[in-house]
Image 1 (cartoon, rainbow, N blue to C red):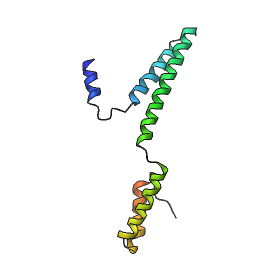
Image 2: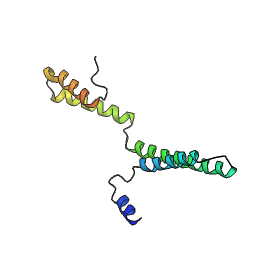
Image 3: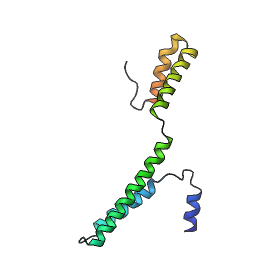
Image 4: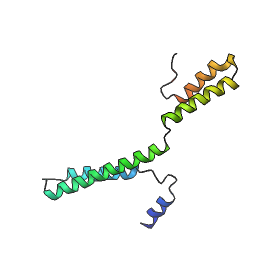
Length: 113
């Protein structure tokens, strides 16, 4: 147990909760597959596990949202990049530079305009 605690203390991304979510989902699936019938206590356990999964997902979402750019921040950055291109990239090279930038940041590839 001490080794696991030390491992978590040294985790470079302590907010990463995907392993916890996987464990909860695994426990739920294992528990459901072992059930022969449903008792009142089983319903309580099921609801508790589902709530734990939902809370973990909510936590992951909050952590990711905190580090995500807002729409206003994205707009500002786009405008700023456009200004920098106009200032520092010669007109003759601007189209190629913009195309290369789009290829670098667009996961779906370059857009045809």
